[in-house]
Length: 108
Figure 1 (cartoon, one colour):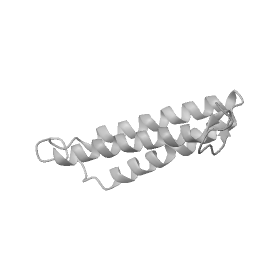
Figure 2: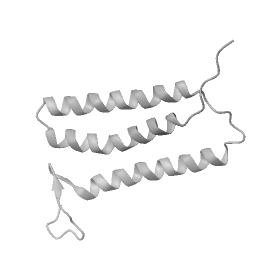
Figure 3: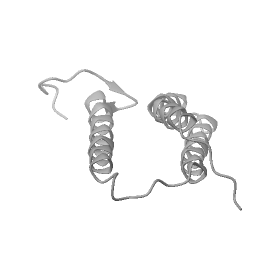
Figure 4: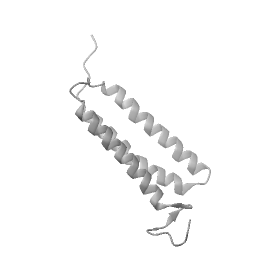
């Protein structure tokens, strides 16, 4: 990269901060579009069981934990912390949203 890069705000472990923000924005917009489409098609699609949604959030949390712990163990504390802070909001929001889900019906 050129030293005269316009809008350069620094770097973490050799990666420009614009890269982090760019990926965060990309993921945010992807989820926003997905949620918009899901809301638009909500009447046509039946609601899934909350148990399946909990498995999705739990597997994302386990994958994040694995990545963060592995990065930390190999001496990459900075990327481990960045990964943790990037994923935790999504894990908390997903789990909080599932708390609001209606209770499952008893199987007969």
